[in-house]
Length: 390
Ligand code: SAH
Image 1 (tube, rainbow, N blue to C red):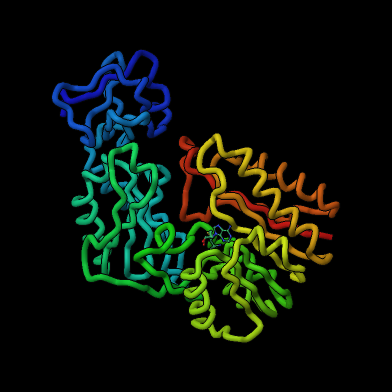
Image 2 (cartoon, helix red, strand yellow):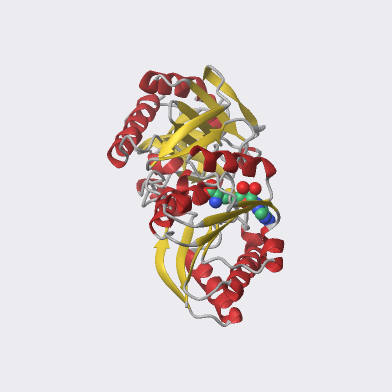
């Protein structure tokens, strides 16, 4: 491995020394001869100092991603990172919660890899060729640590295309599991593996679901972009009188219905609307005093930001205009390109247009099983406000 190193251009080692994982193609002076895309190489500064190990793909603007920042050999470093990731989660969750993100990419020193635990099932997501090549090793390491009932891969993300990877979804190890029941803060959910969104469940909102539970007593709740009913079940568990759920996905709502039932909430009072939230908010009266707005990322790239902000403003304005006084509104943006300051401006404009007094009573970010390396703020995407409308 000694001679198989990438050499960086002069003064292009600073980010790496700061433990940032990414090596942009412009920073690379030379690849070793015969190097194959996706393989792991040493990384050296222009002056020849060894900085660690990264896997590389010449086709990508992010040509390399660091997996070790010292002499630790790559596979050893990966094993250690998995072990460290598990150790953190063991300190975060008790037996009431058996679903969480075990590995959060760069935030756990494992760029290109996400591993979510759903009870005795692991779902992995791979976004880079380098990680793809490590798949057999990862499956073995995870099997050794967890002996899971199955390891299922859900790698269907547009970012794989730049890496030259097609989407992939399927069983990697163990027996096929279509639906798994999880427990989160004592609340139960069914998570579907094939065909579901993300890796099956929106784990990043766990702390917010808990917040919803603690503020729902006696409230009429509206769960917009409800997916499989995460917020709705918690609202009912917290004593909400009823919940209405709105999502364009009939499949997600069918599972939401099952999730309500699983927790003993079957009443006639709850309604499931297969509908576009924008239209729903325009058409309905909105006699709710707890509204949740958790849309998908409206800005998938930088150039989408303006359009995305218009979308965020529309839904927030419609809610502010129509809800009665003394209502809670929990509003989110999970677009990386819309940062918290910008999102707050959008909410300001929506409030101002609606001519309502709106106050932030709590701010929200990613749940703690989604750690963000201080050196790698690029993994931070979720921001939300709990608002009180006078
Ligand atoms: N709040 C959910 C996650 C929301 S993900 C949870 O905590 O589990 C976003 C959801 O919005 C998806 O289920 C998707 O089907 C839905 N969606 C996307 N665009 C929509 C639209 N215009 N109207 C209604 N639902 C939409």
